[in-house]
Amino acid sequence: MPVGPQGAIRIRLRLHSPPPLAFRGPAVIFSAVLIRLILLFTVVPLLELSLLLRIGGWLGAGPTLGLVLGTGFVGAWLARREGLRAWSAVQEQLARGQVPGRELLDAVLVLLAGVVLITPGILTDAAGFTLMTGRGRNWVAKRIRKRLEASIDAAQIGDETSTGEPGGGRIIEL
Image (cartoon, rainbow, N blue to C red; front, side, top):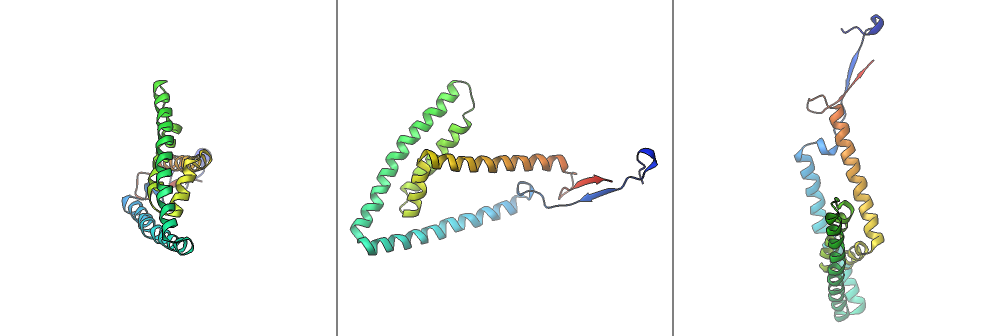
């Protein structure tokens, strides 16, 4: 047993806690992503179809089709306009020799908004138009940045406390 200063006995306890999601391995991450994708590609279209059928019942087939086509064309136009604006901001930052972090995230969100707006549906159009507005894009970008920062912090903490064994763990000396 190791002896510490002044002859005290040092006790080492190894505490194991589940590692952060980034360190849980590809199988867990893959299954979490797969479940989200399955929900995204099954639940959202079913909700969209249900909503479009209700709107079609209230307005009729013609106006509902016009609404879907109109939002698709307006969304494509907005995506092109905002996408060019975001891409020029990225290029300006690069021309200054700076890393275009915020501008690049805006460009990706505008691209996502364009894809979502071209997809027929009311909920996806609402999400796409929200992403096209500066306020909505800022809100989503802030949430993405917070998640990325938390993930990076978890990775750094995992590196500092890892013992090199599977499952990690911290050593606390008493």
